[in-house]
Image (tube, rainbow, N blue to C red):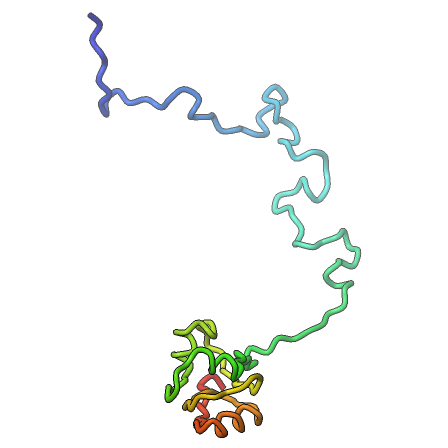
Length: 158
């Protein structure tokens, strides 16, 4: 019976084909990478430190400079999540207080740092206390007509 050889730290070897010899460039014609060492002929790309910046087109005016520049995005732009009166009427009970947290909870708006604006599209038959960052004139009128009240929240982002 042949004894099975145990693998220990003393007789560990790398699997066959897992270790490759490094390429030794410029070590004579017989090596396969002699003379020019795989860099081709003469010129800019044959030199050490070769390479041109991204977008370089051989001295021709590069595309990123030929195209017109336009646009600006303000990092301070304030965007509003819009909620209509009809959404408030169908999602809240009489006497409820509507604020951004409740609107997120009910899935009317997504959780975000945007300001909320209430618009007067639709009808409101319930008495609600509505807290938002902005209101349209028609929304204020419809909320007040239903017996509710409007509270404007100061937005912390601007």
